[in-house]
Length: 236
Image (cartoon, rainbow, N blue to C red; front, side):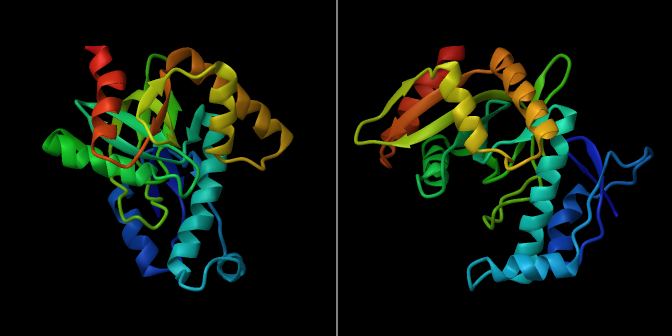
């Protein structure tokens, strides 16, 4: 089967009906050769499943393994996974990225409560940022980290926001070194030397073309208002 993910024709034969249903919104009748061909065997899925939590299903393990392969493969196309909850507001995508457990998804749900129909979540775990010649686009992927939110959508990048927990809500602009460190830990890593070199090149290109923020926040509704005023309203 062929799927169009991040504007890349991706060939893969799903092992389970459950995972096939996740991929279905991205299915395409490709008129060009596959850009990426993914292979992940039943044996590899079973081995991965043994290392995951007891309540993980076979299909979830397949999704995790295939997603990891995809996110490594896209690096050579000037694209990168950013582990984040991606919201769409006023026609642009804003990525809220943090280590697991910090509360990025909790924060983006505050936006839904505060701003209603102006905002929706396009992917709650694994969107892909791709650098084109004249724009930077956030693409939804079928890889959702178990959240169930994985829309087949694409929007221009508004900003990438690194989320930290704190008692008070504030927003600041990080240094380039902070951006690189955060991106490294929130994207596909443990890659070979050649791929790592391309990944760092992508980071440099993205830093020159995107806006980045650090959001220190609590889990109160005011956090979304503070973030909106500093990150989105400042564009107007």
